[in-house]
Length: 138
Image (cartoon, rainbow, N blue to C red; front, side, top):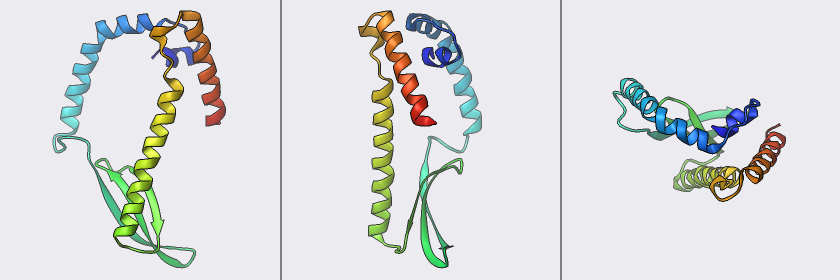
């Protein structure tokens, strides 16, 4: 939250966010929980499945493997010429290694250990991380 507000020109301390969370967090969590329950009556938890299609790419018929979540959003896709156990395992390895690498990079990039350093150092690190993120994302 501190980073999102900083992007919009509002500079607050992480302690302020913590106090807000302690005061308003249970209210928001209750609303989100109620909305989620009403939206997901048929889904006990988040799920995804492996989907495959036979498609023509550049005049050649190939298999398109997709990881699709319960809302129908495509999480990952993979094209192969074969339809066997080896192709399915290659897709799963690609999807899981890709998720893990992206998650680790982002987590390490924005893990600033605010509670261990003073406010000025935290602000400098946050500004540097945000500038690097903008250069990477553009």
